[in-house]
Length: 297
Image 1 (tube, one colour):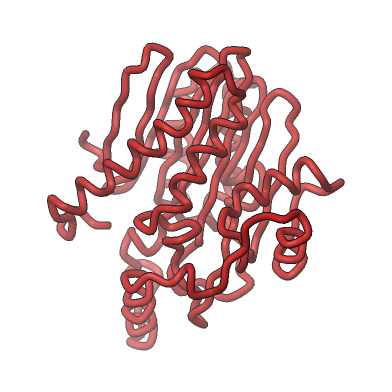
Image 2 (image 1 turned 90 degrees about the horizontal axis):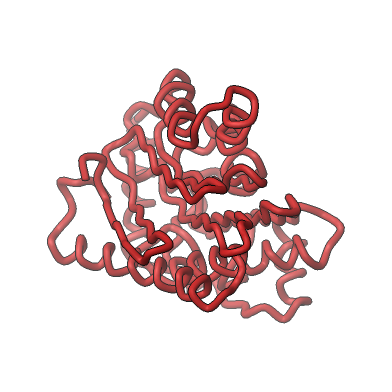
């Protein structure tokens, strides 16, 4: 949501939603759980919240349908699972985890992903579960803009972005990342975004864990999430230096807008963005919390 459209009530709701997601993940870590369990818990919380563009609050395709994506990656093993074109799973991030744990593959898509969700006994829902009036109206506005000859440069930032994610470091020193999204408003049916591509929108290894949000095509072309880890490994950059270089130099040079959240093996956190705002928050080992929406917070 653009700053000029944010009401005090909506601001409060968004911050409460972020706080709930932080608490869900942090509770897992406080109780000695793994970083993977923590990011799943945090992302699931946001998938169930209609304010976020994932799960319940996902945006519509150009045809007025819902196609969801999600990814998980365990940094210690580099095991990963992703799904794309999901239409029935209430929590696509849980489906992505089952792909990682119960199949020989990294990615499943569309009808195969839906069938696998049912086979695994995950909670499945009907299409009307995902309907929200706000997202439906956004689709009508975007279709009208396209019909009037609007260009990519005219697309509002909130129509380009809208991904949720979480990264975590647990007491064993293991890193993990998870990401989930409905994609872009009025995307073509069948479009695959950066969330479902390991190394583009999601990455975790022994160095860092990264989850991205933004204009997905640019994040794919930049291998944005992996590039943070590569810069740290090959250039000796810090997490902040590496993530800033990707978001504020590489992506900007390509015309890509968005941001990312990242944590390294020492517990350092970076959340750079190159647009007006990005819903974000963090909680450290001492329980200190930070929640922000705009770039100047």
